[in-house]
Image (cartoon, rainbow, N blue to C red; front, side):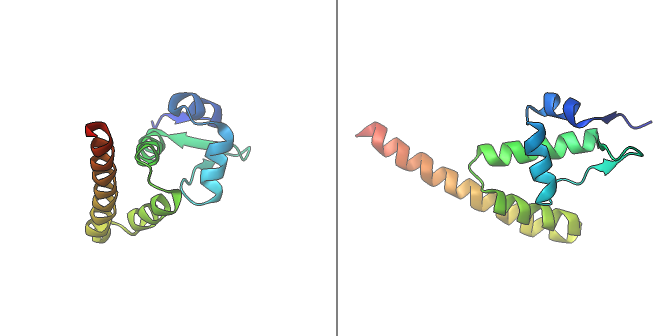
Length: 107
């Protein structure tokens, strides 16, 4: 049996607010199923995906790029190279920022 969570449980577990979760749904980042009462139902898979979203945001990746990543992910394994490329672009931006900060520290 798959463990399921309500929006309030997911909000607590992921430390994302319920309005943020609703917003992510409205822009197509998450796709929770609905139960008979039309409440959003989340699973452990949703928790993993939300954790990825949080980590991507923490790197400064804009939601628009995370949405692009999500769209590629939805298309399946044929997009793995494109997804890796997106992540590498973000890594390069971070390395650039790190170098700039290091220059300021060294000054």
